[in-house]
Length: 125
Image (cartoon, rainbow, N blue to C red; front, side, top):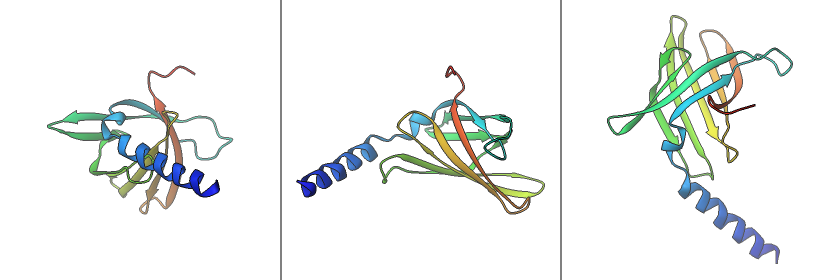
């Protein structure tokens, strides 16, 4: 019985991965960049748009470079890079089944790793 449940679970993971589509990210997102869980919310926009058959990301006022996706692990994972005078910012996230994104931003130049969450800009609280 456990083996059957395990195989069924693997099949569901595989079908969820097959259903993941980068187009699911298209739109405006509100990212909560609070530095600690008890800090006040600090919101910044993140946008994914289709352009010339590809997706383009904009985050914190910068265009995303080298946007990549991976849907092989049961969810849509993505990563891209933005830059400012301090250097590159490596962003990554995963679109969760509830429609939210959980992500990370790593900056070597500013010496931090930020953990953030995002929801569609038009989502009600």
